[in-house]
Length: 84
Image 1 (cartoon, rainbow, N blue to C red):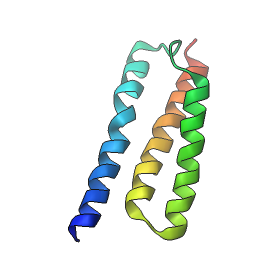
Image 2 (image 1 turned 90 degrees about the vertical axis):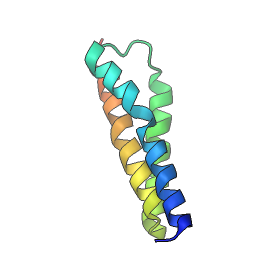
Image 3 (image 1 turned 90 degrees about the horizontal axis):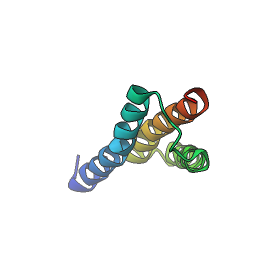
């Protein structure tokens, strides 16, 4: 593995963990009132598009990052719709 691939994986990791604190806080507080559903849906949709792109070109950093963000943003959508 060369340094370019490592850089891509590091960037994918850092991008992937950006939603973890929000998901955890929302789950713990059982409150999603301050979250914007429109923003979460845009993030979810964009990660699906990036995921398809990454899979088509077999770009593992793109696939991994967007798969994780897709799951985390789907969790936020669920929380937003569930925690009133």
